[in-house]
Image 1 (cartoon, rainbow, N blue to C red):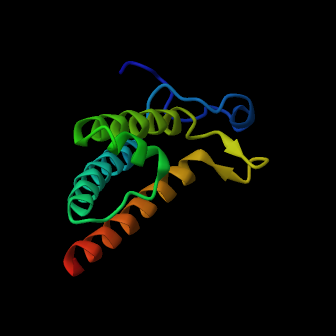
Image 2 (cartoon, rainbow, N blue to C red):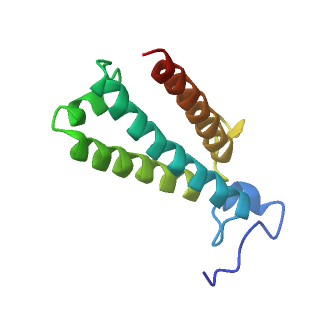
Image 3 (spheres, rainbow, N blue to C red):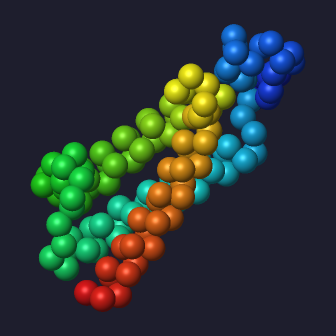
Length: 126
């Protein structure tokens, strides 16, 4: 909480030191929104499975075979670990610096929104 770097001091530091001590409000809000959408996804998935649907993600289907609690715990451990990695690496460029990890984090948010809309459609027609 007392780190001093929220951005780079010099332009030449961008390539050498992509890490920061403090994170922007936008990054934190994005992480929180993804967590909320992940919780919504878990609840919707359990509801759909109880209505006869099947989990198509083989990893999550494996955990779902142990019951709802292991499924939710595994989902949040996996999601949380990935989100922490995304946050720490947010300024790191991949594909030769073409894409920043923070853009992938936004893509995850958009994909989760699409997934929730899809699940809501499935819940209304089932």
